[in-house]
Image (cartoon, rainbow, N blue to C red; front, top):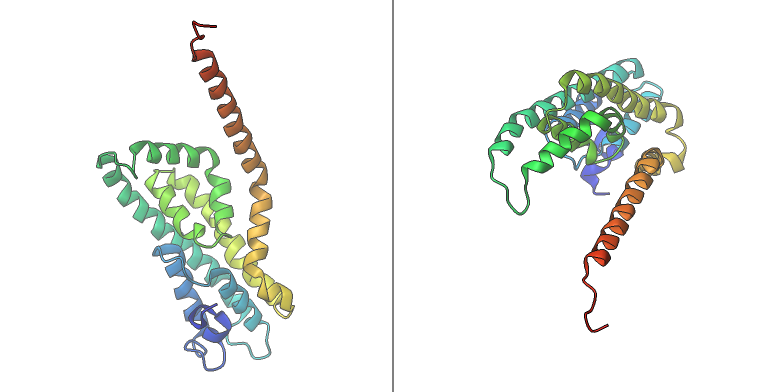
Amino acid sequence: MPQWLDPMYLLTGDGPFASAVLPAILVIVFIETGLLFPLLPGDSLLFTGGLLSAQHNPPVSIWVLLPAVAFTAIAGDQCAYWIGRKIGPALFQKEDSRFFKKQYVTESHEFFEKYGPKTIILARFVPIVRTFTPVLAGVSAMSYRKFLGFDIVGGILWGGGVTVLGYFLGNIAFIRNHVEAIFLLIVLISILPAIISVGKRVLDSRRASSQVDRVAVPNDPTS
């Protein structure tokens, strides 16, 4: 990865934030989750923070890092949600175009009301997706009470879980070098039943449409 995305470079040695590990982690987490800037080292940053907190004379205590990261992750999502809520009304006033239809927002609202809790939690572990999911939840006017409750769960599981993983397993090279891929695989396995269900629904719809088309074709009068 580019040097400016490498948490070990950023937080250790001669890196720009080596003397301010905790503030750097919190600022980056808030920017990624709350200010719509997805190209930041989220998972690997938290993992590295946990790794550093396990060292002798750590730059930050794990007991400070854990609650601080979880709180910041939750606060960032609240910011993104309300950005979405502010954008939402303007979208409903916008005319339909090739790339935007009001129906998309309505369908998003229905999706979050039905599947939102699982989506809010799992999205935390997927880079880029975790940045835009709370915005979309706000745009679609998902119930804030429901969003807040499950976002707190997701923030604690992601912010605390990845940090703890780095604290205990950071010295295992394979896990340290593949932390993003590991979380993507876990999320993929978690949503696999939903993907299969959607795939079956699409195939059934296509079969039904194909049968209707065959019935609608008039018989050849010459036959």
